[in-house]
Length: 428
Ligand SMILES: *Cc1c(COP(=O)(O)O)cnc(C)c1O
Image 1 (cartoon, rainbow, N blue to C red):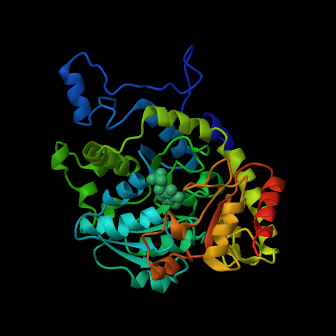
Image 2 (image 1 turned 60 degrees about the horizontal axis):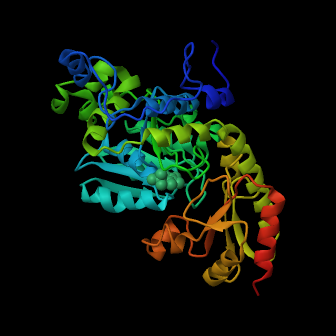
Image 3 (image 1 turned 180 degrees about the vertical axis):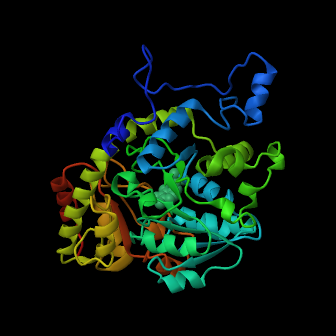
């Protein structure tokens, strides 16, 4: 069959039932799998045969859904994880150890920033944070001999800066390291970072891919294009025998297409067990079946709301890359021609206090520590997801203390604007 269009893969990718088999992706709710002989099972442990033995490492339902996301992103291999946090942790820890260093855009999800800046530092991995719009020279200046990866978010949560993926990929490759992109906000429906040179993609599937606030989850996708074997001294974990796995050398046995994900499964899933449950993977798949329709609706609503806010006299500023005149408008035209997702951020005149008052007055739009849902919701990050950050860190991350993050759902834009109108009317 010729290569399918994206919407078709969203609906049917990853799973093709045979004659008389279930139309829906089966939920394989089993921790373990039965074998006739110990030799049969031994081959799985040695990674000589593919198959399932224990759901902490791999489960067929999860693999089916990972294969769908892999196909939408245009990757070579993928795995589901228990959360987006686990996906970003694995993506980096798979190639960086104590004594190594990573360069990351400072415009990051608060949880990711904390994971890098606090928890992974405690593991001995050093991070340098750079501005999301850093020049090539500035990105280069952050590199050290022990740098193992460059990291950024396509559309940063909640700063909504758009990353110049081609520029970041160029500098990463000049230094012989992969570019890892967290593509949570656009989803592969709006942007496919591999087409712009990214090497590894991560997702919080909790967000738009699920889209209905039903299951926490994550995903890692490998492009299969980064040539680890060109830098064996930099990536010994992929290019030399893994003594904890019967001496397998991942790049030799699984090629560039499979090495990264197989290593992350065999080592990190085995040791950390950040698995997604098959039930969650099933729910995630239901969400993905409509994500190509939803992303357009989210984006249309967000643009309408952003235009409304921009012209409102009680609004101090609006950030939406799809809005003409936005600092990232040109980047959005290039990387996100079909829409910039449903998330808009803005500041109300009167700062922090006015922001809280507006949020209190909203009726349809709910206050939630969530984003990227079919139902509209909003959050004041300085008081929630980013409360562990100092004021300086908030500004560096592009999240001023008056910022309201509004996640436009797929309701009617008219009703969202009516809710905002009445909430803004009630402040002085
Ligand atoms: C939410 C989010 C994460 C973390 O994902 P969880 O599923 O909540 O663990 C990571 N990156 C981005 C961009 C996110 O929005």
